[in-house]
Image 1 (cartoon, one colour):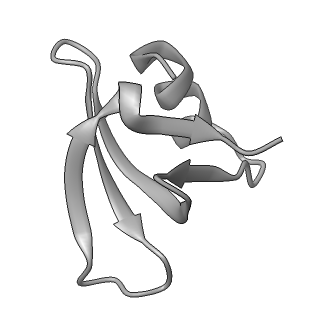
Image 2 (tube, helix red, strand yellow):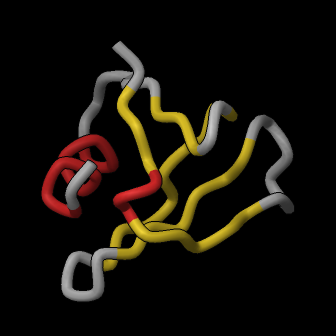
Image 3 (cartoon, one colour):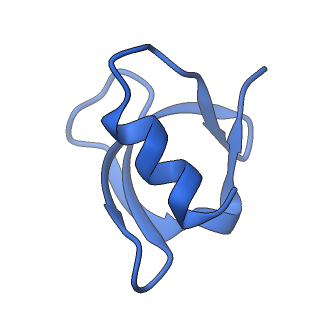
Length: 60
């Protein structure tokens, strides 16, 4: 995924599935300038990681 699409998903009112290496994640923040996103893995709010948006995949 690219940073622009990650930002669109983050700002969307709809629920759009996103996966990181097979795990469902919620996008918490997108740094478009650096191509990075902070995501929450699963339902655990303390399990947040910052990753390259290239590692994220939109669930279809």
